[in-house]
Structure formats: C-alpha cells, structure tokens
Length: 153
Image (cartoon, rainbow, N blue to C red):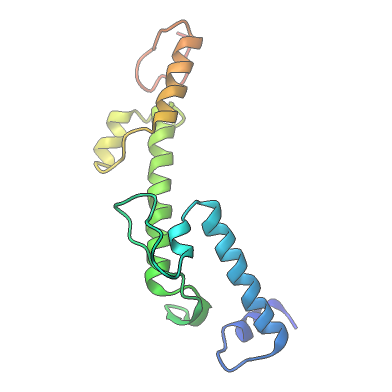
C-alpha cells in the first residue's frame, strides 16, 4: 500500500485498523513534541490552566480528531488550535525577518525600507540588537550606514 492510500485511511473516521490507529497516535505525539519544542506548553494543557508565555496569545487544547478542512475530513488538531499555531508561527517568522534586516542579512533592505513595506514589523529582538553591537565592535565601532551589509568601504 502506498502513502496516499495509507493516509486516506488515516483521515477516514470509519477506519479502525490497528496500524492506522497507531499511525494517528504517532502523529499526535509528533504534533505534541513540535509544540513542546516551541515552548507553547499552554497548548498541551487540556485543562486550560497553563497561561501562554505571551499574554497577547490565546490558548486552545490541540483537540486531535477528525475535522473538516479545505482538503476534506482530516485527522488533525482542531480549527482553533490550528489557527493559533499558524498565528504564532507567523509571529516568529516576522520576528526572524525583523532580526535579519537589523543584522543586514537582506541585501539592499534597510530597516526603514522594511518598515515602509511592513508597518507592523516588530522591533529587533534584544538578541539581534546585541549581535549588531558585536558586529559594530568587531569593525572598530564604525557603522558604514544602514544596509551596508558588512561593507568595508
């Protein structure tokens, strides 16, 4: 049996084959391990008592089960948790971009240009600010202008 046929069974609520049920359980463990790796312990607490690390975020139990998606019925996390996870990943992506721009890692993109294009771009993280200071110190304290990307002249 190929992967497509196997996963069609994973997503079929009527399939209770022992191997397929075990595959669903393994996917739940993978999802939980990924959530834990991000430090989003609140999403792992079905009681809802663990507050999110970021108080601006909401917390929802993962709610693994059969859910309707744009691709049809799927064995996955619930819609609210799925939406929250995507929102948190988007925030991390925006922070990573802000840090990369601050560190001059996007050729020709200054912080000013980045903020004009993305007005909601977060400020660089304390870690990125520290790294930038270290970069400048390594150059003898001179900054060759925003967006110089480490130019020597």
